[in-house]
Image (cartoon, rainbow, N blue to C red):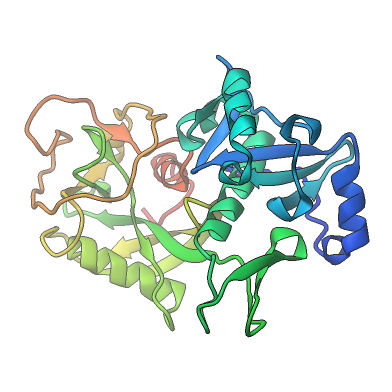
Length: 330
C-alpha cells in the first residue's frame, strides 16, 4: 500500500545535518538544488506540472541560514527556501521562470517522489513561519540543526517540528436486509456530491482507538466498536499524519447536528461502485445539517453525481479497499 506523499527518495541525513561543516559543504556544491515555497504554493515549470528546483546561483544572494535541509540523493542535496525570505528582485525573477501552484490539486499528475519532496518542503516551511517565537518566554527563535529545530535566543529552549495525529476511519455495519454498508459524510464547503470517510484529531491523553470511537460518535451519533488499524499517510497540510482504521457500528440512526458534517449516510458496495473518481482536493470544514437516506443522492436533492474523496487522500484508499472487500468484517 503506497499513497501520495509517502515516497521519499531523499536520505534525511539526521546525524550529518547537525554537523555545520558537513552542511556547508552540501550547501556549496554546484549540484545542490533548492525548492522554493510561496505561502504554501509550490514552484512549477511554466505551463507544466513539473516541479522547478533551482540552483543557488539562480537565488543569489542566498544565505545558508535562510534554508532548510531536506535531504540528499545520489545526485543532489536539496534545501527548501521560504519565498518571503528572498529579495524582491529575486521574487520578480521567479515570476518569469515558472508558476505557483497548490500541491494537492496537482499531486495526481506528479512523479510520486517529487510529491514527497514538495510535501516535506511545504510542511517544514510552514512550521518555521508559525513558530517564530519561543513558547516559554516569547522571545525570538532562530533556526538550528539545518532547519529541523528552532532555538530561543533568550532562554535557549529548543522547539522541534510537530506532527498532529489524526484518525480517519471507514465505519461499516451489516443491516437487517443482509447488505453491509459503510458510513460516509460530507462538509458543506466541499464540491457538490463529494463524500469521505469520517476523520478527526486525537486528543491529548487519548489512544488512537478511543479517538476513532469518539470522533464517529461526535460527528454522526453512530456508536462504533473494534477499531482496527489499517495504514497511515503523511499529511503535512499543514502538520498531520493520517492514521487509517476500520471499525464496526452498533447503531444505525445518523444525526449530524452536533458537529461539522453537513450530511452523512450509509452506502452499500453497489452504491459506492457508482461513485465518480474525484481528483480534486477538498477541505475539511463546513456547516451543520441533518439528513439521512438510503439512496445515493445529493443532500440538496439534485441529481449531481456522487464522488469519492480526493484521490490523494488515504480516505479514497479506505473506501476502495472496503469496496473490494480487502478490509472490514463484512
